[in-house]
Amino acid sequence: MILFYSETITERIKYVVHFILKEQMGIDVEITSDYSYCVQSSLCIINYSSKVFTKGTFNILPHGLLKETTIIEQEINCINQHNYISFFQTENSDFSFDVFASVFYLISRYEEYLPHQKDEYGRYAHINSIAYKQGFLNQPIVNIWIDEFSKALQKHWPSLEIIKSSFHSIITHDIDMAWSYKHKGILRNIGGFLKKPNVNRLLVLLRVKKDPFDSYGFINEKIKNKRIKSLFFFLLARKVSNYDKNISPKNYAFKNLILNTSRKYTIGIHPSWQSNFKDKLMKHEKIKLEIITEQYITNSRQHYIKFSLPDTYQELIKAGILNEFSMGYGSINGFRASVASSFFWYDLSKEETTSLRVNPFCFMDANSHYEQRQSIEQSQQELVFYYDVIKKYNGLFIPIFHNNFLGTNKEFKGWKEIYTQLIDTIHQNQ
Image (cartoon, rainbow, N blue to C red; front, side, top):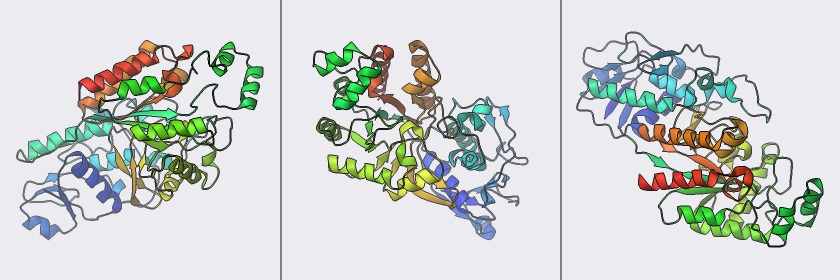
């Protein structure tokens, strides 16, 4: 048990103290603003104030962010020490920077509430982020900070027991377009053929060749019986658009694919692009998925990783989503919230901890292929890098794969091998 002292207790303090000490270190913690209570206590005390204690407290001088209730531009000066970057430095403290304020700034996505540049899809552009500007986008810096902080606490109190979280993986699959040619209907296939004549389309429709996006047998063969947690997110847009090109949710074969997948693996809704602009559309898509599967859906990932804070997350909560998997960029691989651990979303607009659990991803095949224009070898190396660094800090490793990347389309040659090697690695290290 640790006693955490602060002259003022705010929702921000309660949130980040619970995340760092309870969730990441396994330490029970009591937060108090009663100075006399601390003086009389025999517990280990973290003194998050300018007050002076006569006994061996662990002192951190507060930066001030956690006592605020406004969202304003923060002055951030990054320095590189001990082989990692930090900010919100403090003096006369037992730790070189305010780890609580720094962690809160990153995992609350504070910077996304400030005025910022949008990318071509109207999303928060990764080039705005401090992680990108300061060169630590590829590092789970929050996990690194907490690891260093735990070492400092144990050095200060050698008998303090810290129970770190264990490394684990969730392999996720986005089913944006279940088939390339099959089950699209006559009009869509005729239009597609006239726009871009393709013999393969005819051979697939004549059942001579397998649809190039049909990778479900391959995926099942790789992950079945290996006790690897896997999620499948299905796009169920009711109308086809420039960004929503899924098979109709009314199609029997598509519904059958969803139902069969839900009987083997955990599934979630992949809210359409259109749902960002039409009230309650995302909830209607979720209900459709629930009707097909006869299951209550609590998992979600935004199509095109398109979301804005706090609006999108507030809508997800209203719809009954409990676990969100969009925290990453749809333009570059890396750690959007600078963390490789799940966390409850803190709604800065309401200054409250919510029921929505955020599960950040660090790698997506489409980012490597389309955005970063990497070779297969480079993509493989990057994926291994993220796996290794997250494993080193006992984090949560979540990559994203699309069914079309794991099919027979020549454009994605080599991705089946990358997927196979990853599954084998995870299975061997369980």
